[in-house]
Length: 205
Image (cartoon, rainbow, N blue to C red; front, top):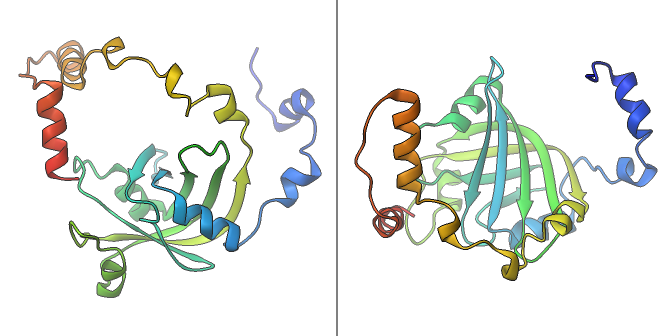
């Protein structure tokens, strides 16, 4: 049986609590700003004009996402794989969802808004670091902000190092890519070791 209407969905869950509705605010306050300043990691969700979905992890030193004012964020685009899924979605629809995380904190911060890709020299300068000046900056205009409760991270015990699986519980990234490309595209590729891959990553962090 599938749920196909909003009414049927609500019969399972009932109404949202008053606090969960009131916690959504239209701009960045001091608490949200401080959360962003402490965050070295954010998941950026986007959708293209034809429904192509993407959720992309972005990381840097704490505060790498800059708070320009109560309605504006600047996020540098760092070197990646050049697929540009997120950036193409921004060009197509100009909409983003952001999930900020702080290591050791079970709460997260969610922000929804509009986005453009900026090459304005002033924006680039604000986002430069010791390694580089970014090619472009994702400029986000904030529509809504809210703190997300700790339940998901508490259930997952994400920060408990004693529960982290050994790296050997999965093949290396190269081995997995080799197997997937072979299975779905019928091509055989050479693979690099985990150490070689990490070293390559470090050259473009």
